[in-house]
Length: 135
Image (cartoon, rainbow, N blue to C red; front, side):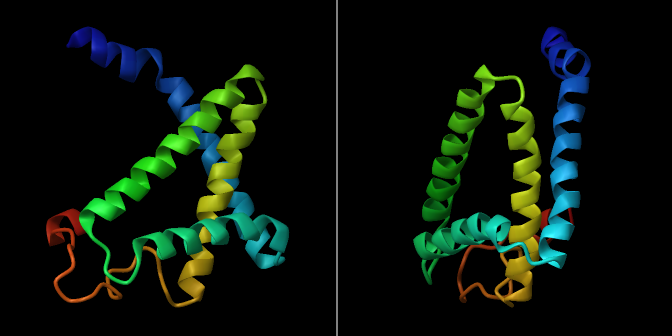
């Protein structure tokens, strides 16, 4: 157990912090993408959000949502791993991920549909416990 903790939290801490820093750079650039309305960089995140909303449907279930998350994460991990053949591509993907997350969250909140809001869930839908929501 000690070897695993050492591997994760000591030997690879700076690589994880570096990756998080690249994502925060992308989040910072998303401010300018939204402010100056650069539609070419806004197109992909909003297209993905609209596809996810279509796949989830009007009555989301836990199984359907889990499958969408699993498929999306698997495809993104494939692109990250395939991009690892060149030293610059993973860095671009890290910044691009932050940019896409920032644009998608802000623009979907402006549309009033809020991807991180629990208000739009139908009655009887699965909701996280209040203790989990406080985190």
